[in-house]
Length: 86
Image (cartoon, rainbow, N blue to C red; front, side, top):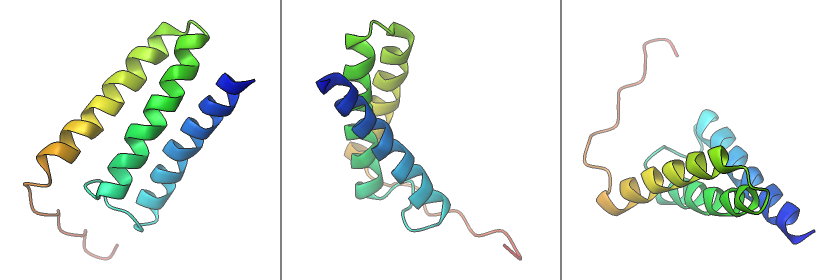
């Protein structure tokens, strides 16, 4: 029962971060967004590992590592300009 709770919480965090980014409440380089991705990947990865779903373990590991690297490096590029009329 615990793995499904962890997996659900992880996927929920990932989806929430995605929706907050789409609605422009969080940017891809904000610390909160990156931490939500790191923690979500960790929890979803544990669930995948327990379920022996190794392709998803790889996916979550790479996704979480990319978020961690971006968090550690910080945002070195200026934000991209908004498209005209968007």
